[in-house]
Each structure stands twice: as structure tokens, then as C-alpha cells.
Image 1 (cartoon, helix red, strand yellow):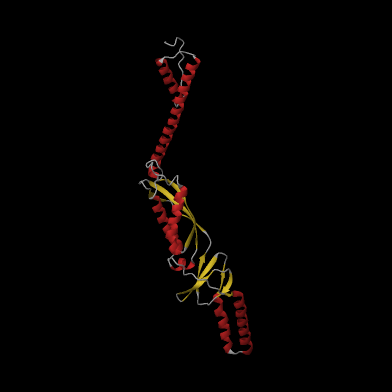
Image 2 (tube, rainbow, N blue to C red):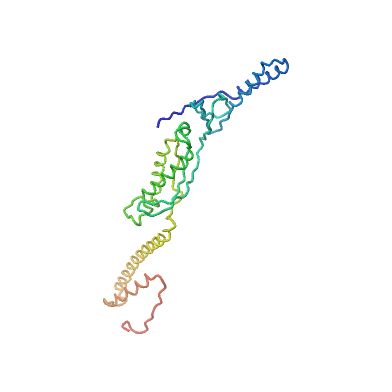
Amino acid sequence: MDSQEKLYSPISGYTILALCLIVLFSSILLLIGLRIPHFVFGVVLGIAFIPGFFFVNPNGSRVLVLFGKYVGTVKENGFFWVNPFYTRKKISLRARNFDSERVKVNDNIGNPIMISVILVWRVRDTFAAAFEVDDYENFVRVQTDAAVRKLAGSYPYDNFDDEQAEITLRSGLDSVNEHLEKEIEERLSIAGIEILEARIGYLAYAEEIAGAMLRRQQATAIVAARHKIVEGAVSMVEMAIAEIGKKEIVDLDDERKAAMVSNLMVVLCADKDITPVVNSGTLHH
């Protein structure tokens, strides 16, 4: 969208204030001293100038409108005076934070999740913010909520159900945040809004499935840990049998090797302490 914003350079308020005070007090003194009614117009004129004064703070602006016609935007800081018939709409140019509410949506594979976004934004085009949308602050809130809902439906929460997913909401935050920022910027460009940063502020499974998903994650972690334990145990058993045979500590036939492998695997893979049984007889009893 092409910007229709145009800068307006108002008159210094100090100059007009000095002239206004001179006219006002001179008219009052002449009216009292000479008692000429015509000087009343000077008093009225001095009072009529007063509504034209205004301030513009740093990173602030005033959008000027005359009877429905856009005159321009004052972005210069200071004390100014303009035509008293101008309406002046204040628009801040400062960066603002917006922390959206947590909304319940479905991810790419249908799981209900809770998600919110943190947005840093500011007004870039005062004309668009003032006239292209009805309320630009509410527009930011509504469009951000819509962008978050669309984003959540574009990715799975994790890759437990979709192992082929390269980017997920939980693991691919950089890519997801970049997508989110682009999506919000496209939606808010009509209102002259510039996005400085957009990122996911909260992400979790919805309450009704959170318990089940936690148990699934725990089960997955246990399986992964057991897999590592078994791999290590097999290596240790293999090394033990090899060392026994190499040093000729005892001659193990296949039956004894099988018994030793079984006992060592039980000891190494058990999740509880093993109580050994001491054999006081021979190897065969």
C-alpha cells in the first residue's frame, strides 16, 4: 500500500503566543482606557487563537484534519500553533508490547493446544493508522489473534505423531517465529503498522489432553533410556565373556555362557537392586 502520509510544518507556538498576548492585553487596556467597544474584537481574536496551541512529545505525532480533509501529520517535537479549526488526533510512534491472551486451537494434526504470542509493534504510517482502519489498536489485537490461530494449524505441536515433520511448534521456534512475524506483518500493513518482533510467548497442550501427552512423553523417554541401557549391557556382557576366555579364568561352554549372559543382563538392565544368590557348591550345583 502506498503511503498517503504527508508531513506538516506548523508555526512555532511561542511566536503566536507572544502575538496573542500582545493583542489580548493591548485590547483589554485600550478597551478599559479609551472605552471604545471596537477593541472587544481584539480580545475575542486573542481568545480565539488559544485552541490552536498544542504540544508534540518525543516519538509522538498529531494528525491534522480540516472539516474532513486530511491536512498533514506533525512529527516534529515541540510547542506549535495551527489553525484552531484543525482537529488534531494524537498517535504515538513509540514501540509497544502486546501480550495476547492464551487461546485454544488445534495444531496441524488436530491436537488441542494453548498458545499465545508476544508482539512488539509501532505505527509507521499515521495516515493509514488514522483512516484506513477504524481503531488501529483493536485491529492489532484481532489480526494478531487470527494470525496465531492460522500459525498453530500450520505445524504439529511436536513430532511424536508425525515423525516426518521437520519443523514443529515446540522444536522449530526460530522458523515458527519468523513465519509468525511475516504473517502478522502482512495482516497489519494495511493499518501502517511496523512489526519489530513477534514470537510465541506460551505453548502447551490443552488441559484435557495434557495428562495423557505427559504420560506418552514419559513412556517415550523410558523406552529411549532402556534402549541405551540394553546397548550398554550387551557391550559389557560381550566384553566380560571375551576377557574371561582371553585370560582363561574358567572354561565356559555354550550352556555356561548362556547362563552368564542371562545373569549379567538381569543385573545390568534391572531397574531395582538385584539380590545375589551365593552358590556354595560347584558350578553344576
